[in-house]
Length: 380
Ligand code: COS
Image (cartoon, rainbow, N blue to C red; front, side, top):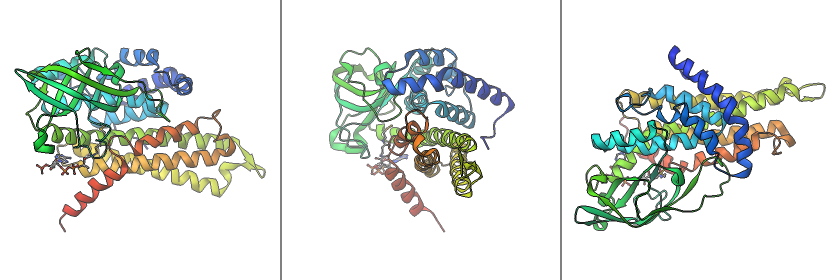
């Protein structure tokens, strides 16, 4: 099964699949080894407009609905999860701008992506990962400006971003209620990025620190009111988590397909292993998990699309999809046996790529905390 999308969206999906098959899948395998950022692949992706799929039409983007975007992101993740991560991280950064930005900020940021740019969401810090409100970066008022000092870490797209959304404290004494969000263009004096992280998986995405040293920005760069930064960040993550789920579904689907293909050709005890019940049951469970995760993603995004509450469902989709992506990738390795453990075959990469989906955009422990809180609020 797949997401239910319009005929027009199916044509677009077929084009994206063709692009991913021709330009991403094999090429990213090489870049996974070198750990280099595959600029030439991204240049082509930006050229065909993949950085504009979620940008609203009134700001020059394609303004695709959530389910269509999910179908496209799944296809990207199937080809390479680092590729998916790079493309979706820009929309993560655009989300707070669309949520609370002024018309001018929205136009400016959307235009950057429509023109073929990247963006970064800067919330995480060395001491503010799961404990996101423990942000140490400060933004101190100085006349009509703010001066920012601090360091963000594990920031996707940081070295290539055209703009950054930075969460900083404008009032330490107020704690969570003293955090504010800022829209920072690349090239701002005092802004720099750290070294490219040498990651276990999603190696075709680029990740680094963002360092702010006496970085002066005008008051007009603030997103929303002072003190609303944490809630804006939380709302942003609520919206993005189902999309993280669909990246995980892409990995699981690829692992399933690789395992099925192999099982048809590998012969043991006189027949292909796909004819052994032990393998069939594994394949069935891999499919059940992948499809269930996909439908959770679709459900959370449908609620979001229709203006219904979706925080719990988004957390469930992200958490479940991240967990099953690891399980399904492990099962694919098991079905391929010794070959599955070899770098000659694609499934060991799928496991390395899948692991981050239990960690980024809120660990699955944090998702469970969000889900438990929501469950405890439920009425009989
Ligand atoms: N939407 C709107 N408001 C929210 C919210 C949400 N999803 N989650 C929390 N808030 C509000 C709360 O209502 C509260 O406001 P009031 O003080 O007015 O009641 C405020 O934010 C603080 O909430 P809370 O006390 O629950 O915050 P915590 O510090 O306990 O943190 C978690 C809550 C753990 C959910 C949060 O820190 C989190 O999501 N951590 C993971 C961060 C993450 O995903 N990082 C990934 C990197 S970014 S790619």
